[in-house]
Image (cartoon, rainbow, N blue to C red; front, top):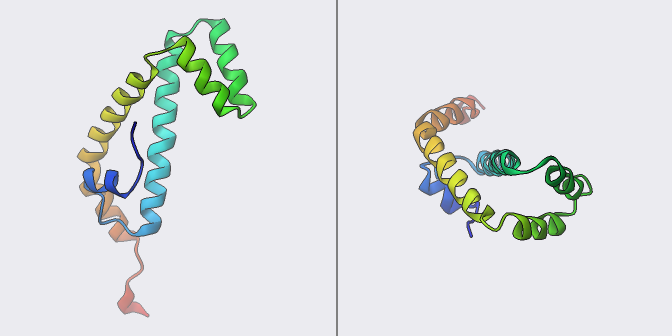
Length: 112
């Protein structure tokens, strides 16, 4: 499907982030994507479906939640792909500012 890794960060123009910042960014991308996909799918669910799906999430049953999605929303992978593309476009547009902010937050090695 897709990988959240260093190659993705390079594609987004963020390959120059320090390693700890890369990990934070990947975590942020994952959380944002998960939230957006969840919101998009929730818009299409009935109250009963939402309750059923949330029961998997609340019990941290990721395998059950995935199986439920595959059964009830067979197009969910397309929703994920669409949301990822939208998020990637937003991050690419912000990449220079993200890199600049990261550089400004790094300790100056010459000040030791």
